[in-house]
Length: 84
Image (cartoon, rainbow, N blue to C red; front, side):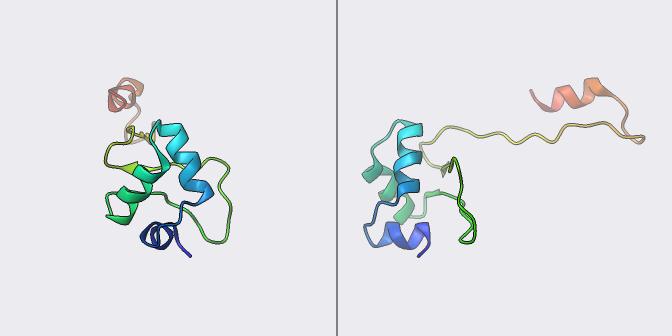
C-alpha cells in the first residue's frame, strides 16, 4: 500500500509519524493533508528510507541545489549565486 493509499484509508504509517515529528505537526494533520493530495512523502516501495521527508502544504521548504562548474561555465561566483 502506498503512503497516499494509507492516508486515504485513515492509516498513519511509521513514515508519516517520522515526518510529522520532524515537521512539528500532529500525524493526523499530516495524514489529512496527504489524503487531500496537498502533501506527499516520496517513498520507493522496494527500499526503506532512513529519514523520510514530506513535501507540500504547511511543511518546511527543502532545497536540492546542484552546484558545479564546467568548461562552459567556469564561474564559481555564478554557482554560489544560485544558492541565494
